[in-house]
Length: 261
Image (tube, rainbow, N blue to C red; front, side):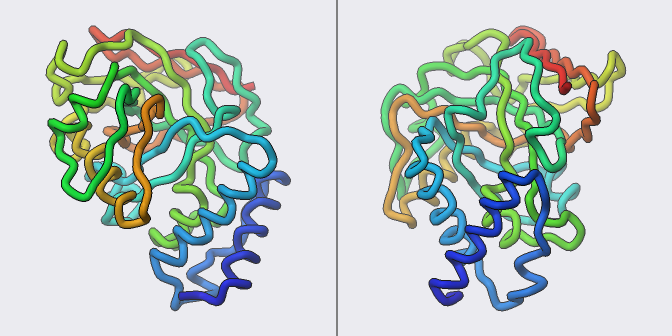
């Protein structure tokens, strides 16, 4: 493990980068001995500082659950981060481009939990029983660490590169559709850029939520009722520039739109 003062210092660097919309050098470039547990410790210090500032945790994000995302990043195992209340937008929102250091969009499904979920033996079926509804969601990626050469240690420390989420479409009970076959068409400025099917997330999007519940058990916590869980992207990330409009068509589950200004 990295020394506690190093972990605290790196969390402070990331907090500054968040405020200043900047990026910092790779943690693994400076501390090649850093482990995954170090990176979750850095994320936890950063998270607790945000909670102390009055922000409210409303959910979690899971990343790198599909081959598409693992290939795009060169990272081969999932990770997770936290969602704060002031980072959630509804469909149709105009999102301030300058709130981010860099902007990419991912296509996901989000699970709203009706009851808590806890490992260590959480399954897909436990997730479906605990879910009130599933809703289309676009994750806004935002990295505070230089992108080239990142490892999973860098990404986790940076709250799994989470920037925000846009939710919309039709909230759907989890047993009303075969979630594996939910597909999406992602457009930027009226041009289709990416397509995908939700089974690309570990063969079933609920599998990502089960993975998270089991992972959190290792960190002595659980998923709570009322949390929104981003299950992981089933498309590659799409880069966004100022002024871009985004539309994602989930078929029977509806559409999401937003614009970055």
